[in-house]
Length: 491
Image (cartoon, rainbow, N blue to C red; front, side, top):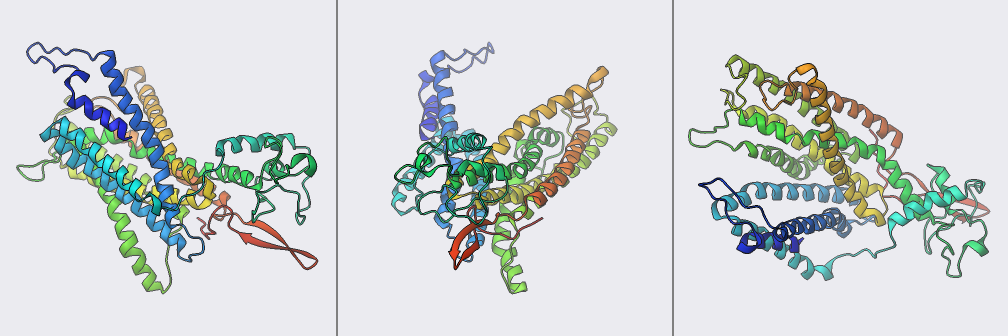
């Protein structure tokens, strides 16, 4: 990532690596050369690759420093960490949208690109200096290879009968593993770790002689954990679709009175800061005031479960779309009354502060759902899948952006049939953005019901994993948290 930022900085520092300034008199600009464009795109590519490595791993790596299953307050510690992580990320975005943009506007691109590059360098330097102090999980083989091996081996063994549930030695597991029997959900995958012939299937060191013929219990449970959360993960896509409607909110703000005083008005593109401020404010209040106060009143630790917070976030996102639709309906009617139907650039006699509630609701929705999602995945997955747990939320946002574009295109095409004005017309006063928001509100309501069904079907946050141990003449079953901490959390 540092390399990408330095390359981007160089495009501002070195005149030869960028096109010359445009000629103001002739209104003409020279196109960049192939080399100049390659350098610019290379900087973007390096930053994207770096961000793809840092973002999913940083939150998982941070959680590894604090995760201690023997600590009775471990769940609360992790919840607090995830909250503060997102709060700090929100504050950093706020700084980039205000301070960094101010520097770029007033001091130029040389300083504007140089400051983030220097800050990134200092961040990396501090990270490496503190490296000896970190808790580091030992790397293992590729998880994705295991995800493919399990269904392949399970299919090969599809005709095998399941061994008796209270029997020992039938399932292959890692050396020193606490678990000798897989969970019962998605039971067909358990055949991937059944030992058919110990002499042929097992090597002398206890590993599988052919990993494409025999998997471990751990591999099976890792795939099960991923498959189980996919329905709940899919419910978070809708909230990301709602949050991605920033372009319409920018158009709304541009057509409204943004003055706070006679000499200052909020830039139309800066209203998104209310989303960030509400997210960060809620995290701080929730962690430092609300939970401690509630715990003091009840006389015992109080905590909202991860799935419950995910559901609250989905509900708040739905309400944000309802509020957006109502505000836009009021704004459009006022624009028509004032005679601005054909003037999309007219500024109405209506305060842009009307847009603040929907931004705050979006911020609260993200604070509940995003943090709840990340904590949910991290607690449900084994340690070996920590980075995947952190990456799932980002993957949902990427899918949401693609779906948001598809929904917008479909609405534009369907509502403009027969020569009618599209709901999402370029002229915000002629269009019906309020109807588009109502559509998103309806979709969000359906998604909330879908979430409740998925949450009920999922059951408790961590499935009971059986450890079978000899006790007398029989066997004893114990509950163990193979997939994460046991959390009694049902919606």
